[in-house]
Image (cartoon, rainbow, N blue to C red; front, side, top):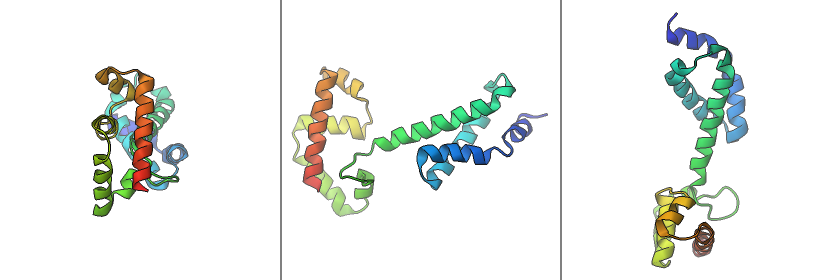
Length: 156
C-alpha cells in the first residue's frame, strides 16, 4: 500500500476532531480551518518519519496544536494599540493610519525607534535584542513597554 493511501486511511473521519482542537486554540472558524489544512500538509510531508503508525493520532494532534501555537505566536507580533481586538494590522488598512504610524514613529528617539523596529518589524525576540544592544533583558522590556505606551498614546 502506498504512502498516500495509508495516510488517507489513518486520517479518515478525524477531520472534525482536528478542527475542534484547532478551534479551541484559534477561536474562529477560518483560522482553525487554515491550521488544520497546514497541519495536514505537514503531516503528509512528514508521514515517512513516523516510525510507529499506532501513534498516528497522537502525532497528528501534536502537529495541529503546534501549528496553532505557531500561528498564535505570529499573531502576537502585531502590536495592540488599543483595548479589545484592535491591532496594528487592523489600524493600517487605510493610508491615513499608515501616515499616522510613521508620524508617531518619527516622534520617537532613535533608540526607541530602533527597539520598535527590531521587535515588531524584524520580529526579533527580546533576548536577541538584549544581546544585540548589550542591554539587560529587563532594560529592553521596560524601554520597549514605555515606547509602546508612547505610540499608543500618540495614535489614539
